[in-house]
Image (cartoon, rainbow, N blue to C red; front, side):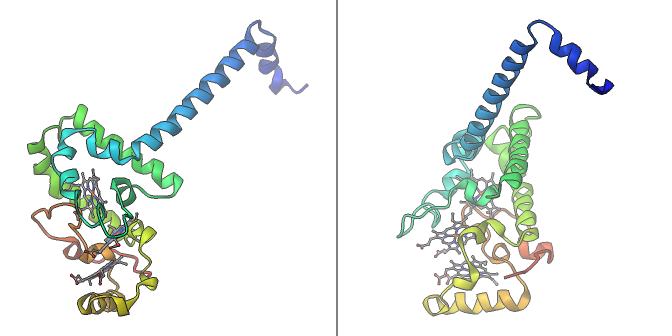
Length: 200
Ligand code: HEC
Ligand code: HEC
Ligand code: HEC
């Protein structure tokens, strides 16, 4: 046996080591099982909209009855559809953003009252816009396929503006901002400069 295994052999010979291994595996399984469940729960509209009163009385209220909440087909986009990437790894990374929100609520108290939240809204909105411009409105495109928009069925304005999008390399969020929440004061996404990768 190579020497490198010696510590392992010593450890393996200790009484109770098998029990420790089994316990370790059980704890691991439990942790991962519940982490997965937490991720599912943390993705839910229930969690996002109701976990703290800042959300319930502001952004969630504004979203209510918007086109993504109620429409003729009953097909909805809820909080996580727009705010959390659909792929696994980016999803987990985005949850870190969620943890920073919770941090802001419970630890630094930077957004723990509706008034403080309102004061930070432009900054929070801008963060969303900058991300969406950088990823070419990836979350919007998860549901909306620009190439499959039937121009014949769109309004004249929509048709014209979507042509403009292609010509000027714009992205959805450049024009369709504040569609779920009220518009904060300050420069909009288009004024933030051109960072969209523009691959429509
Ligand atoms: C989970 C899927 C989904 C996501 C994500 C999504 N949408 Fe939608 N969107 C829909 C559905 C469904 C409708 C309603 C279609 C209908 O009228 O039947 C809609 C409608 C719209 C409309 C039409 C509004 C109107 O008044 O007719 C716009 C504009 C729009 N979405 C833009 C966006 C933008 C911008 C994003 C990203 C920030 C986005 N959507 C993300 C599914 C989605
Ligand atoms: C240059 C600005 C601009 C960009 C970029 C843009 N749109 Fe639009 N879009 C508009 C305007 C303006 C309308 C028409 C609104 C109206 O008629 O009231 C519209 C209408 C729509 C509608 C409703 C169509 C209809 O006729 O009812 C949907 C859905 C939509 N856009 C989705 C998107 C998505 C998804 C993207 C990104 C792939 C996007 N738009 C990019 C300006 C834009
Ligand atoms: C159709 C996409 C969409 C849906 C659905 C959506 N949001 Fe947003 N959200 C955005 C965009 C885009 C912004 C950036 C500001 C803006 O344009 O309104 C934003 C901004 C925010 C902000 C930053 C503060 C602010 O006012 O800009 C918070 C917090 C937020 N959303 C929470 C939520 C919650 C909670 C829900 C569910 C109840 C939700 N969002 C549903 C697209 C969406």
